[in-house]
Image (cartoon, rainbow, N blue to C red; front, side, top):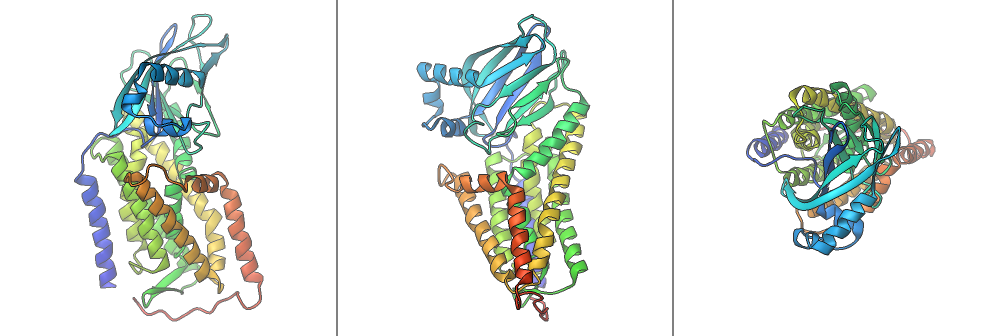
Length: 423
């Protein structure tokens, strides 16, 4: 156990050093779009920031900062984005004008930036609906973050997030309030976990061995239901504490790590937790792993709300709402999966199930790591993860069916508990 604690401390130290020892410009998350709006009395000004790497995937053609700014190509891209942008209010459809076109680096990722002007038909800006699906119509994992600034204010307030299931958001003419930002942040926290395959997979990798105990460097059944539940609570709580610390520090601008580094470290966290689910690396140290790598995930969460020009009052509401959304969704995931895992852990097929799930985690994490460190330009397994995330209840139902069948098959259920020798 001393070796296990030493490894856990190294993991925690590595996470802290990575957080405190790296500096860079924080931004909205890697390869996502941001729309910033400024309502005025007669029109709404704004700008749209589109990541070139996602834009080239959506259009199925290579794009670089140089090729995108060629006059003919820039005009084509401007028409594409304008064709996927619409607004309407009480008086009917609004005019959409997209002008300019420049490439800016947002956290070391090239983004194509257009200036946007929305004009109502009667020349009076009121509440309106923004409809936007550029890139979203081709990439189901893409997200678009919308923030709005009250007239005369200097800071933006988050308004909502668009994804492939929802392309519209209502924009108040007076700008968003702190309450709007809080509710939008709750929804954003829910969506980021529910639709974030990497964060979900990390949580699942930690839950898979939770009903077991480590003995002689392998996983064995041990402990009663109460002990298993306590272990799950410890893991989820440790992860929440870890990501809450860096979420607050990152969103307040006190620490900053380039998004590509954070996303790569998240892939590493999944890989380590998956290997741990196969063979215990830190016996009894799942909570330490969850807390240490939770620091990394917190930086990714902070990137969602940390650099949109949000004011301190709005930022506090965003942090509280976003954290609430994350925790509610994590508890929902635990409630959906843990009963099946607990039942399966009492059967003879659980070793195969555990190794199968963890093995899939190793493969997916390796592919993510290769993509995020630019070893490969596109992850060939993205379609698989997108499909799984798009049907979470089907996945949970399938696991429940497997658990029920395994429990009902004579001879496979009620696997005897093995004696545990500390590893």
